[in-house]
Image (cartoon, rainbow, N blue to C red; front, top):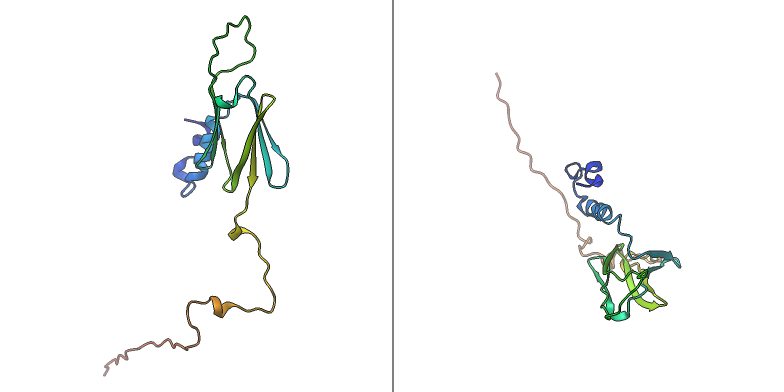
Length: 165
């Protein structure tokens, strides 16, 4: 199969299926170079993917996000032109990008033959740091088990007598 399989045999890793699937995906698509693209980090949490799609109109491009995979598809519709020389490729393509768990697509634009897709890393509220005020002890309010009643742990021990001479 791929070099990933020989380097990291699945039989040696339990519970790492997701990571190994990601590595397999990267290995399979390592030679996908069309259309040429850039990935820019434009802020602390903002990214931009630029694809050179000269010759494609908005109607010939589609963008979809499913299962953390951004898929951009281009299918050129022939206009019946007769070319003497064709240097601008308009072959159909399907370009995929794996997104991190909290990366969201915030929009896309096509300008001057470059398709730009805006991405943003959004940390969910539950994972954001929160300020803890000193002097407010709220354990009782959040506790679902009453700790007001004392419970004793008791053991019953059976006595065994050893009969001897």
